Amino acid sequence: MLNQDYLTQAALANKILTPAELKKVKDELKRDRLTLEEYLLKKHLVTEEVLYETVAKHLNLPFIDLKNSVIRKDVLMAVPEPIAQAHQIIAFDQDQQKVKIAATDPDDLQTFEFLEKKFNVKPEIFLTTPTSIREVLKQYHKSLKAEFAEITKKEGADKEEVKGSELQQLAEDLPVVRIVDTLLEYAIFERASDIHIEPTETEVVVRYRIDGVLRDVMNLPKNVQAGLVARIKILSNLKLDEHRLPQDGRFKVKTNEYEVSFRVSIIPVFDGEKIVMRLLQESSQILTLEQLGFQPGPLGIVKRNIDKPHGMLLVTGPTGSGKTTTLYSVLNVLNTPDVNICTVEDPVEYRMPRINQSQVSPRIGFTFAGGLRALLRQDPDIIMVGEIRDQETAEIAIHAAMTGHLVLSTLHTNDAVGTLPRLLDMGVAPFLVASTTNLIIAQRLVRKICQNCITSYQLTKKNIEDLSLQIDIKSLMKTMEREGIVMSSDQGVETLLFYRGKGCKQCGQEGYKGRLGIYEAFEITKEISELILNRASASELRAVALKQGMLTMLEDGFIKAKSGITTLEEILRVTKD
Image 1 (cartoon, rainbow, N blue to C red):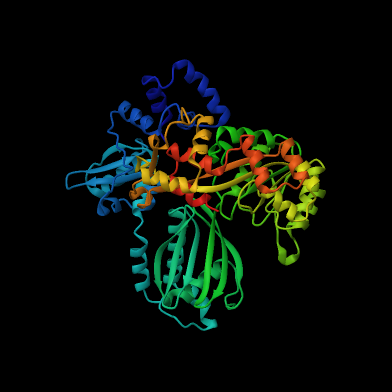
Image 2 (image 1 turned 45 degrees about the vertical axis):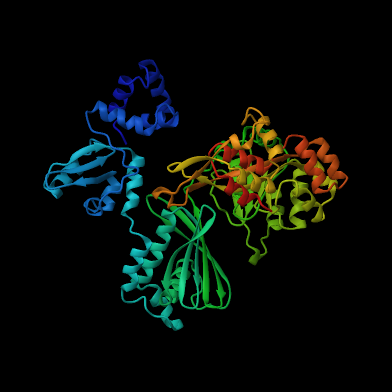
């Protein structure tokens, strides 16, 4: 963290703030308990890079951006990772006469003295940004292959046939412990959402799901399988000697940098036991509705409907499409001291302050329906039900919405409009669905283009022909004109610029980094309510919704592809039925 005096002097000297603004800002800093650096970055008054460069100039220090630098291994390792992490310093260049050090705090004299003794030469100090340091810290990690080559050489990971009595001992063998720790650490480091450990006849395949796509990361020798499974069972508090029945458990990994819960599912397969671990980031911040990626029109519809005191708001989409994240973002808006919010979930994925969260446990008879009944006796204003899976849960949720509660829930359907016939198929009366449902949001998650290697292109004649077989381009261009994305719908799609990632070191040559939602917000208007009462089909409901200006997921995706957020290929991949 930069010294406040340096920041103040640099901000005034470079006219980032005037003296009058600075005086006003100081009161805000006290009230919000922010540092000046946090304030300037949060308010987007200056970028992190410009801020640190300004301070470097003010202190007559050289500035360096290390974000895309590859540092020689021997130079990097000269400063041990724990010191680099704790003091935010990196050695990036060295010869016999000098050593160059990048730091975020130019006043860390104690550490600089330690380095001078270590290198026997006075270090040359450069100022850099915290983001630069974070990127370089990743280079301390060996490749997963190199890490495992070392571990599996060690004695102790080479027993294939293991008796029950030896499982405990094998799970505590150092090589096995290191294999599991390394697998977990790399999954967190790679931002994976799931780890799959799959036994085959001759080896153990490890795959990570990153940005929604499964990738092979490692093939381990078959002889580590028994120890690996035993170790994960011990961490998850599961039965070591149970190999014939599925088991579920969970455990947590906590360090100064992260806190991650692992939800573990183990199932017997032909060649042993398959393990799937879901990673839940406990420290991750709840996103705002704007950060989720809603377009201005649908965002207005969502905000209007969550302001209603009662009724039902449903989010729909396949497993892993971010439904729960959307519901938590809505809850975050609604979470004020004057309301009582209760949830019943399976499982509780995010912990939220001031919200009463309960987790279903079918083994002891605590189901969604049972939990929802109990919640209604807790004087709630807002209820979130993790998922509507059956008629009983649907009916209790709808009756709760009728009796003055705002009910949020999820459902598994392909699009927003298909949710209404689905509720009717569950046996819920049409008049109940028509009078209680306020809004249905359908969503998918698409991978974002890596901004480090983004490149633009135009569609060829062949591309346009292929595209027109899958979507109605004319109608799409009219929507783009209505949304203000193109000047005229008569302009040909071949004139538009689209984008893709070339693949680089930062995105692992994938061309994608991170994910964002594409949405359709289906508002239940008076006209739609009448159609529901008459048991209209999904196609009739959809025609009216489109006439009323509903933006479909495909259209939302196309706008995001045109804006350089994602690719056309990605939109077509996630929206095909």
